View (cartoon, rainbow, N blue to C red):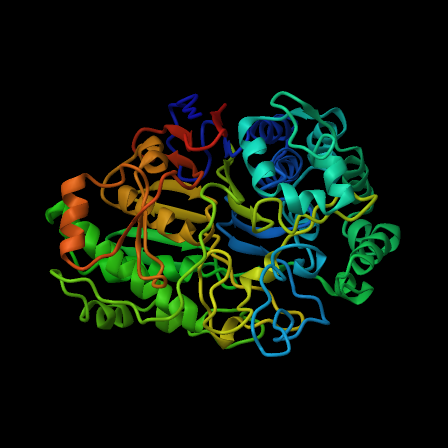
Length: 549
């Protein structure tokens, strides 16, 4: 479903906008955001509402048992900050946690069940957003999610697809099976799915704030439930969790200003590095095959650096300034041939991954000009598949985003080095890339789910914006291709390239990997300086909605 609603005209200022816009992966979450805006909230209150609503209606993508990154722009003073609500490894975690006695990675250990779960960050982030940036009580912003959890929402085809994909792991958790299945099977389309335990947990957070989740009776229940099922959480893990405010990664590309997620997200660094490489070419003047070839070569090099250098910035030294320096990109560009692909080194290949949203993104602009781009996740569809009994909280499997063993790919085929090794209290590396783009006074707010492909999807949309497209529909519908260094394959959406262009890329040495399903679920907003229009679009690959009011 793709909605482009409510073009609003007459805006002439640099800060305030004539209309508010919300674009999210589910119509009920979009409606929750507008409900809170119309109750007097700002974009940050609406972000709390949308985040919590998505936790209810899109449990395969995000939730209270997960985390994310909230990129904020405050219009009153221009402050831009990234709220790091990324999960943290339990304090009992260690580098060999998912290896057997012979040092080999144990299949599935970092993906299924409570041992795969890091300490959630989303509850703390929602409280932080409300207390530091919002203007409404937390209880008001959480009210739509509480209502959705208690009254229920109808199961749709997307829900059924992901529940079917993770059916066995959901069946393995009695609480998850009771919440998300019907008699152990995927619910029929239209089934009203109610989550009363999650409603009570949301009400506890609304009443007690951060302490409602990370201390007291709920925290004890979380720890006891995880440990009883084989996990390693402790009360100290929950007590120690804190949201971190980080400066976003910034860059420029041919007059376009980029503001994007900072480590422990790799998104901003890789996005700026790729755009820096491509800034040395006049892409619109090139033939389509050469243009695609150069974009792929930029992807390859940025993902190589992602694997080698990026991790938790509080635990390892990350050369962000070097990786985002145009002079460094110029050196990488010098190794690119226009007529030949550069082979990636021969590390192990990747396991296949499901296509589509296993994360969630939303974008918000309010009438004051405040804006939010937020990407949230529990990692794999339905996370670890484990729900803590009595809480309604489905836990993430973000521990798989660490390198279980350097050089061994994770479930998305990404490899990592020592910088992203499993370690006590570490935050795993992420690909989530909430982004602001600005050019000639126009502002774009965008992001997408999609695992390892997130950064390249945002790259392709950024290139559309940079080279003149002012139509969010064009950004979210653009055909997509992806290269992540290893495995050394160029993934293609159905119809991503005409057959003759694909054949020409093969002749240049690219190994094509056409997929039978599209990927991503981009949510985007545009504020135009020239016309005063606010427009928004939701990716037709998903079921989301974009509304301007």
